Length: 195
Image 1 (cartoon, rainbow, N blue to C red):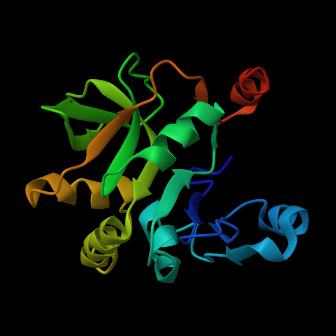
Image 2 (image 1 turned 180 degrees about the vertical axis):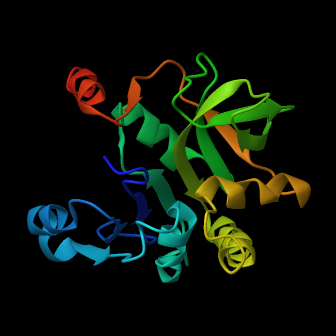
């Protein structure tokens, strides 16, 4: 898979939950064919030269209500998604406190909040899944807007790192041992098929 296979923004409006918006870089046509008119697809032509914050920024118009954002190279138990959807917080991130995987982004959890996403000095894995209330989505758009014009190599996690400095609570949602895998190569794909 490419270094940034995709960011996927799932948008579920209040009430029916039938609308789905996908921002993908790879497999977009297959997803569209499989889901038909229930999916809106956003392609980002600069994915080879910019990082995933810019991909997500290109679909910022979808970040106007409660939403889930996740890396598209993940496979995980349904329980992970259920925990995220049920989170009542404005900003929630899926973490695995039982394991800090070297290939995944890491999170530092202090006093019940995520204080940073980084590879250094962290105590949990960040799965790349975030849930945002309408207000949380607005805050994320503001953070992304600050970065997008000045940082072509910015990541989605860079925007998340702006929250703690502004006093915005980022709730860690511990997946509690649920299975998950980031698929970066053929061996990861083989392991993923066993989940």
